[in-house]
Image (tube, rainbow, N blue to C red):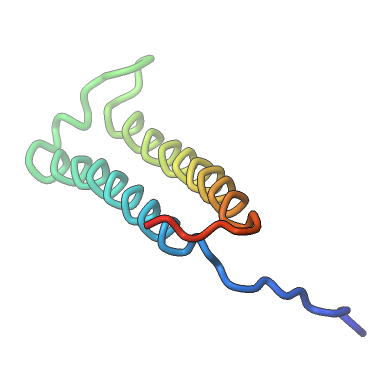
Length: 96
């Protein structure tokens, strides 16, 4: 069973930019998640309080974390794709 020829991707000119964006998004998500953990550790009863549509804070915050991760992934993909398209134009160099 032949898989065909592989593609040549070449050098990734935007690797530095993508790394910085990834670290920034990781730091933002890590901070939001750390706040969730601190609330649970310092005042766990607060997570049981009703907050939105009759749901407690733990449910709302938990789903918020999941949605945030999804949106950050989409944002990362869009930003990096735009940067890669820009960097792959002839004559462009990596901007640091």
